Length: 241
Length: 241
DNA sequence: ATTTCAAATCTGATATATCAAGTTTCACAC
DNA sequence: GTGTGAAACTTGATATATCAGATTTGAAAT
Image: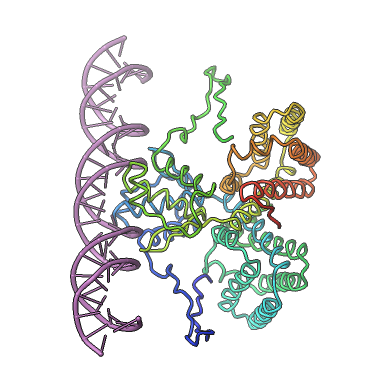
């Protein structure tokens, strides 16, 4: 939940209340909209692998000029979702195997960050993590899919913060290729829900115990397993690793 | 060595010689030039963290219009080297801690790929890996820094190919933040040379033996250790993990 | 029918113009 | 001196125009 920016004021030594800088990314720019829309479309399979993308067409479809389109395409290119052939255009580069690798990338990065989190988390962070885990237990028991989706994000976000990593956290965001609608489907399955809970609890305990290696291992297994579940849904068959 | 595109012709069943597709990325576009130049400048510390970037200025310096500049900035943004604040401009986002995390990211990804390579490599690949390792031994013994730099790239490239991963390999390329000139400095040190050789040999053996876990571990240690060496040179002090 | 090749066309790459949000400056009131 | 606010200025965001490489087309040659 990157947008969760608590604007709580805290008293300062100078007597003047202090506020956090407002998040500049609140404002939506056209290129951002195009980027998100395209990303979502590619990831949910609305383009075929290898399909050519025409800038002018896109611009017309979105009702904007080509400038923000080009910028959005450049972002997608750097993310690895499309490939740009100089003077020849942009081609979709996303398939099941690509998705599999995105999951592996996320597993590698997220487990690295869990490792660091276990080493760097403080007491306050441990307490917060425990609170989140408890909320997850409740939501799992009551079958509250929406809460679980939100808590899942909160959980991973908290691990990221505890690791004190900025770059790694950003990098991981880009490996996320399933959206809320798919998550919902998954969290409606009680078995799946329980598995995820057990894994999250194990991760939280390992981090709180400062067991970096175990945190790393459990996080990795969690990402890979849940990733496979997503794969099997999105691509309608079981993906093996 | 991404540009190492052997254009060797091989005879086909139809009697007509077959050639590989020429690499479309050979052609240089302005935005690409700007992207590379900026990336290199940022990574080698020619911009201060937090420094603002002015599009018009850049365009003038490069002697081009702002269009390719914007595109290059978009790429740098997605790479995480700069941050774009909507309607406010682009700011440099690179520091020692950023570099440290880039190394960790590379360690996580490269070890994941080594793991897969150990599982997926075939006999031909093992032989090729062995050849590369032997060449490294020779170059290390004779102190041929240039060969070592090239072989190092060949080695990692071969591991990537053996893993049969496309996305992961691409992702790793972006975590590379030191260039040939720095590598040269390092490879001129005999102690450092020997360490790198030992590590490369260990990795090659683990992969050839199909020992995925060991391949992963040795690769990770190698990336982190050599990364620390780079850090200590670029930032003039020892970086800890 | 197949090959050749140049003209027509398409389309990405770049340049330039315009617009609007953000920042700075500075006169003025208190 | 401090605070206010409007005008001037900067600069990123977007739109439009131009250029050139790539692809397609189709007539002529074989």
